[in-house]
Image 1: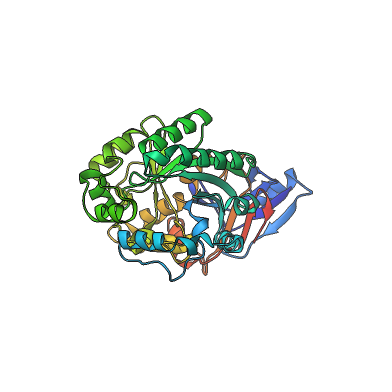
Image 2 (image 1 turned 120 degrees about the vertical axis):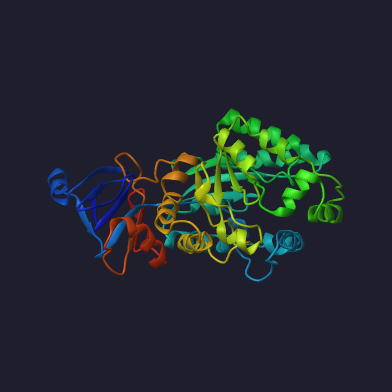
Length: 402
């Protein structure tokens, strides 16, 4: 048994003071230090520096570890030129090594990420995710735009799913991701959704990330028309926006981006109990626009996306970008929502027994230290985002990793 002590603890109701946490692999009790010492007289007392805050471990709901070796090879600024550069640099991307992915995992760890949702295109990141200290929701991704190749694509996908299922545990969970409406044939979509329903897999999908995608799946023209003719010999979209979104009607799905979704799209997605991952830096670098998260009535997370469209997997970098991006929103309210978007909200979406500091939850903690004592408790979220580059201590399942 251990007892963790700090000046502040972030719980469901907000920030509290003069409390401590008793834990082994799960949280056993939250009370004053004196009370906990009497309850657990042999417990190890772990003190933290002055002005420290204990947060539940942070959750990065959407990341592509397989793209962790990009630095200056891909073209930023607009989505279709970026996508063309991804296609043309496939060999470089496929050379991403286990060491590259381990380095990316460690970077997340230092910024307090104790759980992440890994989007796996080909399974090369499986070993890294299984061996990672973090909890991992492993999204086997399916894509393939040609009907004649759908059977082969699905067989390869099933093999990856079955392989990842071998490692399911308290820290590793198999899930499914459908790439996007422009890249995944309806046959594959229906099969993957049926499998997710049968096996109760968590489901995610990229949707309405760019203006080009929107024009393609709504009108069958725009930049995607030229792209698909050039690379794949396809002259019309394989899915419409309506058919793609409706395919998910009966299964809650974590949609990624939605930066080009209309108010009607958002309302429909809300009616079906879906959620969305907000990736502000990726959206900016690929010229995709801004998702106004503060106006959403659907659960939303903040995620880094992959290093193919970002310069770091540091969650504090992402939160600071979001603070600056949403310049018209109330600063304190936005900051509080951003902290929720990397703690309790993704925990619910990914069905993880963490994300909240309460009895019975996993003992996953991210401890950060502020440079000074905050004058007002309600401002701690903002100060955390502005002043933190990496955590002071980090625990997963009661074990310390930072």
